[in-house]
Length: 263
Image (cartoon, rainbow, N blue to C red; front, side, top):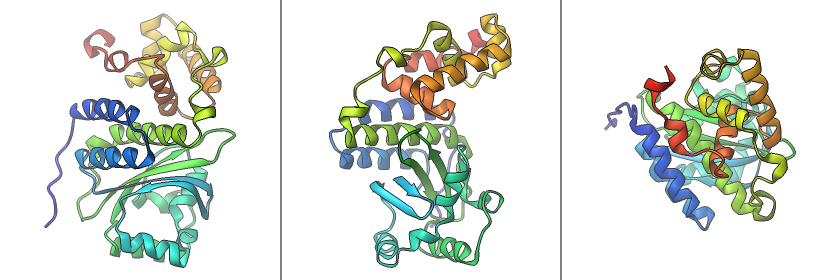
């Protein structure tokens, strides 16, 4: 029976906040996987996969997934992952994408189409993948997948993007604790103006709106955010927010804020 999907609305923020609390207490990749599995269901998806990506045809050693066992066994035995167009798309974009939009991102070959047809037959019908690019390190991805014919839960997608980045960051820090857990050294500390701009960006404000609230031009807001991304070595605003939240430079109370005050 097709599961009824309901929009999560404002609840998605509290879901992410609870996930962050639980994932920070995780002591192993298995624990992170269990928390991510529960969060995936809360957001009305059926499966998840988190992986480090060495190339468009090969995954790294960091992998977490609750995909059907038969599908995972087949991927390993036949090296089908080399035909996965999702990996290729992740190399070409930094923005999340639905699997149904893959033809607009990469040239789909016959093998790519066959791979996606096999995935659907295995119960992986539609997915929402978040590419994660960290300069100087192997890239990564997190996918949230539906098993039936229902469309992606649109209200859950913003929260899913944050979940993906938090999960990958937590797994990354467990795999490389020395490099990743050193915390924001002086070189990574953000200035007050950068934090002001980041908080408003995390609330979904455009550069223009943030500038109006802060008494800055949209171009100046953009420069502050780009400088903050460079300090953390990340490629997207979402990853910047995640790193700053993990390191305590901003809090969820800052991000959630009061929309009436923001205008």
